[in-house]
Image (cartoon, rainbow, N blue to C red; front, side, top):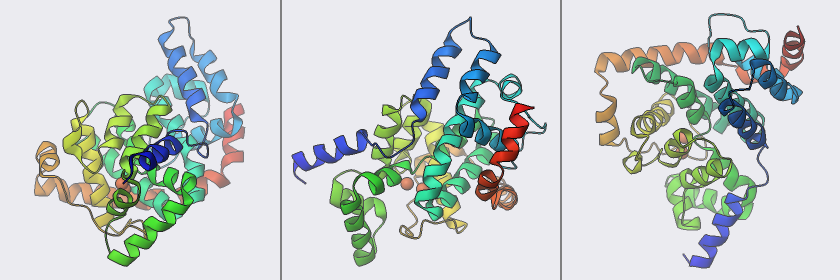
Length: 293
Ligand SMILES: [Fe+2]
Ligand SMILES: [Fe+2]
């Protein structure tokens, strides 16, 4: 791989123009959260400026996907009830929805499944902020979307190589681009100024040994990705199940009973969220009405 070529891919992916403009609002809200003068109402107002996003956020909050016990009908009550960090994670998830779903439904289902598995495992392990890990699970393969949109010629070569050699997409990416989608996703989310808690597990999801500060969440996402593939939620272009990292498995410290219960819970939750993305789109208008109430 010539150095120039790799640098060229890196620049194209870092400056990915085809993905949504979530950083603006997330960054603004992050700054607001650091300001002691900020009120819930002001924060709600900033989110409501983007009507579609606000509607999706409310729909997401009230969906089986998160399963919050109470019905939440306005943005300010979402912020009060769930707290700023949860709402921020939800905004990232809601913003990413459309693009991923439009681009590749199978990859979207795999990502949604991974997010569900992440949330079930994070809750079982008693990790703080399970929603944040679930968000990282939802966007863990965002690098694949960026490669597809920004480097369509190379993406076609990657797919051809997967079909020809029967290798994983990641291996083919490394051969063609010299980098994989995990690294690309890491650059992208970093350029969006997303917190390290999200960026590191995305970057390390295929090699959790390389995680420094976010070892447990990287292990959760790594394992959830493999588990959900095992449960049939594969990306058709990438059917090779990656090897489970021994170190990640040890860190999770799950017993066979834990594993059985996790699979059962994920299956149940997935059943609830099936058709969820369709529901989100169809329900925008209702959610907007609820948001205005
Ligand atoms: Fe991946
Ligand atoms: Fe994945």
